[in-house]
Length: 217
Image 1: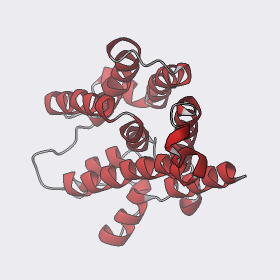
Image 2: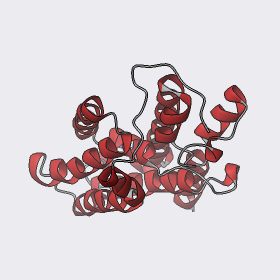
Image 3: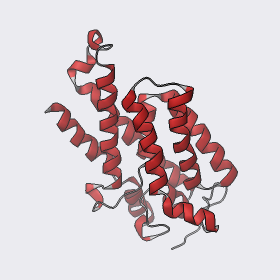
Image 4: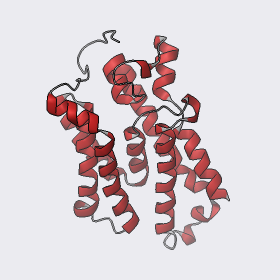
């Protein structure tokens, strides 16, 4: 029962519509009516600029981190004597909590179930469970972003690097985590189909990394 309640709390945390609240509260507009219509960090970068985009990305990442940390509210996982016995159960539960937050980000109850794609929240999930893997993914993301200025392409690159790191570089022993890593890469590619087509056609928008925000609809 406690686990189910925490999963629901994780969903509510993920449902915090950072991009929507920032765009409405600071800029007097709904980010979902501009750019790609997506309530995530990528569209915020594109429409509102790097400062707002960076803030949204950071908060959306924290949603994943906080959701994963909810696992430690279960007394069983706090007991050091059980640590080696419950490693698999703990990781599985943490992934479940993180995914609940991602679902909340994509379908936020606080914003009429119209959210983002969940990339930053997914990253927060990985950061909380395996920080070194997350840092490597950030490196891939930043390298791609600095070279191309395409957030979508950078997200796809980092997501593909994720299972490669888990399966081959770090050789993660947890089977569910390995499956999860592959599923993340597939999900990110599937949710970015429109971006992929725009990249192929040369129509994808670049983020304004080194210039001020320009109002555009």
